[in-house]
Image 1 (cartoon, rainbow, N blue to C red):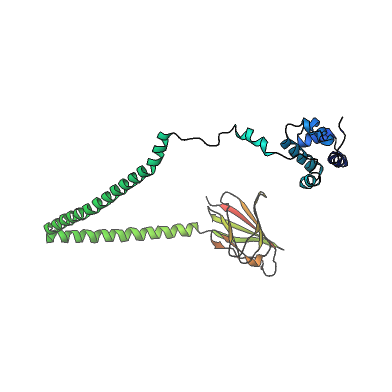
Image 2: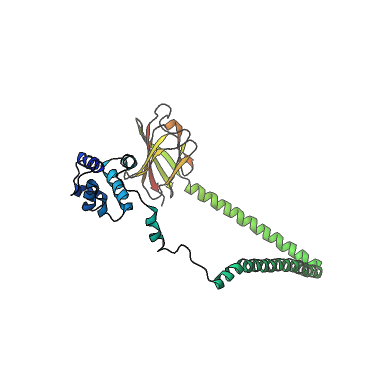
Amino acid sequence: MFYLTELGNRLKEAREAKGLSLEDLQELTKIQKRYLIGIEEGNYSMMPGKFYVRAFIKQYCEAVGLDSEEIFEQYKSEVPSVYSEELPEQLSRVQSRKTIPARDSKVVEMLPKILVAVLVIGVAILIWVLVSSNMSKPDSDDKKNDKQNEVGYNKSDEFNKEEEKADKKQDVKKEDTSDKKDDANDAVDEKTEQELAVVSTSGKNSTYELKNTDTFKLKVTSKGSPWVGINNGEGKLLFQGTINKNESQEIDFTNEKEAVINIGRAYETEIYVNDEKLEYSISPTEVNTQLVTIQFTKAE
């Protein structure tokens, strides 16, 4: 029969102070109950080895809130030490180093030399290709110039005059077509010029209407550090937060019918609609917090 040692009694008291049974401690540490009983009774002969004795005691201490290093130092006369003679049997089973066959070692020694030789050959081929291509270019350029000179000498004065007349006619046609294109573009610009107007104003709320355009790109720019919240017409939050100075938040509302901008510091905030600056209908210096609604009617 084994009786509790001083160490075992200390561990048991710590376990019971935690309100833990041996079954609870077994679940926590994953150490079999019989080993836990052996630790409390000082019966270390039942353990798999001296190494496991110290390991199990360390886990026991950590589970009940004791400092294992302090326990080992205080009860070092009771805790068996791990002897070095236990190690050779384990280490002898592991081959620490594999030998390399002599044939493979020769190949390994030759590998750097082979790589250097391949690299030198590759560099030589690359230099030869570059030199060859540079030498062939002047000849081809000279041949092109000679052909152009021959063609130029064969042209007659009358042919040159006809060419000049044709060039003048083409220039006149180009001017006419370019003028027509400019006129057409001006007409399109006039037709597609967007309209952004105030619809209503009440307190801190202002409503605008955007029409005569098929795009709606919103950009909110910060001149300080305003808090901004942006929702669509259905109340879905698309952005919320502080915009740092000289930074912008851009959202494409082309497929939406409405944009709602909640601004914390209107005097530090600029709103652009398709690059057109929105003029506040309510003075931002008088009313800092504003709710701006932009209703979008897409052009047909």
